[in-house]
Amino acid sequence: MRKFIICIGCMLFIAGCDSAKNEKIISNLEQQLAASKHKVQETQDRLDKADKQFAAATEQLTDANAKLAASERILKSNIMITNVDGENKEDIVALYGGQGGESFVLKINEVIFNGFSSYLDGDFQEVDLDLKDQIKEISISESDPSMHYETSYYYLNRSKNQIEFMGKFQGKGTDMEYPGDGTLILHRKRGAIIQNWYHDQTYKLNAEHLFDEVPQDLYNMNAKVKMTKALQLYKDRNNKEKAFIIQPGSDAEIISSDDKRWCLIQAANGQKGWFEVEGYNNIVGTDGTADDYMSGLGHAG
Image 1 (cartoon, one colour):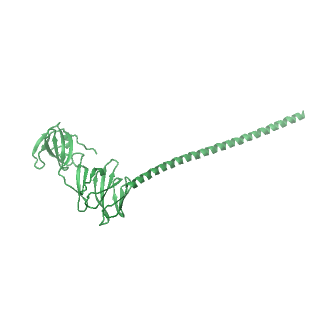
Image 2: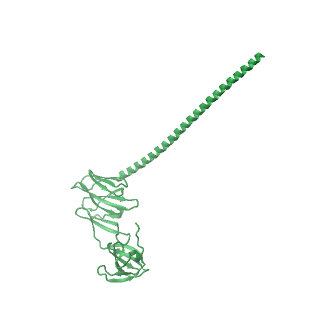
Image 3: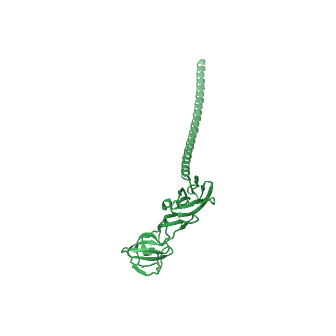
């Protein structure tokens, strides 16, 4: 009996030892599992961070490539090799300044001109205004986000060793015509009176190689209107001899204007007469504007 009790006690002791050992093993396994989970989370965090860094690096690379491509385009379009004054040598002409920038540098060989632009678009061209002289001019264009264009002109004055500014005009290069006789024809000069309209204007180089406007008596307007009030018209701009009264409801066309005060209008039956404006479009001899007497005039842009 005593031996039996001792045997049972030994078995219980052994079982207790095994249970404690198992609990310790389980505890160790749980700790290892927790450590493994922590390491997995750390690894995942590092992977997420690496993904974000890769995405940021990819975006920066894309942006850098775009800027590089833009720079290459500007570089290609803003450097030319030509002959600006007929001397037996090549001239390097360069334009420096970012798109939309206000300041720019025009450089011909080592001669520098520091200029100002309201909205430089990076485009410049060589033009030859007078085929009989040996000077070639440089045009620089501007265009703002509303697509309003201007073009300025420059030339190298070799005797003074400086670049001269010649003038600036409304419009882009395709709005200009260069006959080669020392004139520039601007095909879209904005009119000053009655409505928003454009007409041709010729400029001629003077002895200082600058532009003078060539006076013109009348400019074509060709604006179709419909009369809304009766308007007295005149035969002549000088003595104001009455011609006829154009009646409301009549279709008409403003054929031309001196772009100062007078407009020539033609009725549908072919009769023509003059009316005078003061300021922008106040009709002289009335208490109204041109818009009060006719519809169809445009003022946008």
